[in-house]
Image (cartoon, rainbow, N blue to C red; front, side, top):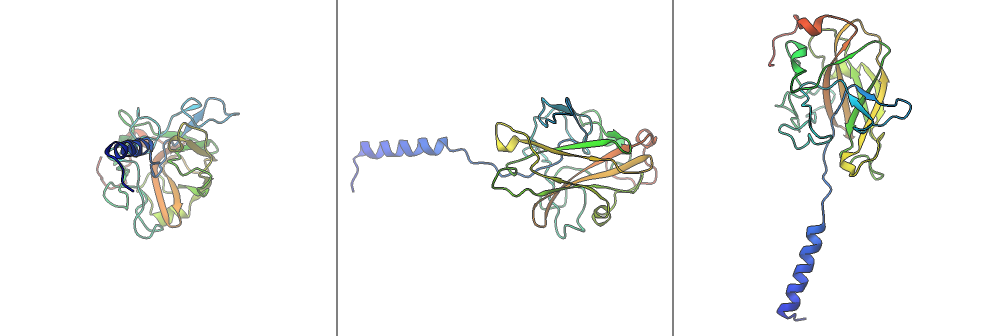
Length: 245
């Protein structure tokens, strides 16, 4: 079939219009947006920004950024563990991993990773309820599996970060990933889950958020949390080898 120039131009313009109206759905990976989410109305949990506020964050977590936007940050918050996920680095050092993520190494003085341009450290007590939040990033739709979020809490008080194997011996909660609210786009759906703080002596501990997207594919976020009234937040941890920051 032979088209005239006018007909060919009309077909081309129509095709370009259809193509330009198509918006591909971004495939991104999640992270712990908030360690300590406080609902405005606990009887009606709402994970959206209108439903509460965050009062505790991961290490060196930038504040003032739109929800679910830190996959395009430099660096992003994506840290995918490399190699054997059971022995991989538990917290991103911005060097290793399939996705290197942001720098979440333990600071020589833990409080140095919080405040100012970064969010505050989580302060809690044994028996309190902590609620963590994360963005769905298109992985909470009906055609997606309801994967697991592990919450691991070290028993290593005021010390160096434990290994991933040690953390796996201290899983305190398993949360359904698709516990989400509604949003204008699947990418920005706010999700979360809550758990009780187990018995620990007063001090600073590593809390790890660990999400399995596919079998053997784990993403993590790390936070220092203060349990009880230990003075380590103010004076630092003296038995931790000096590290960056």
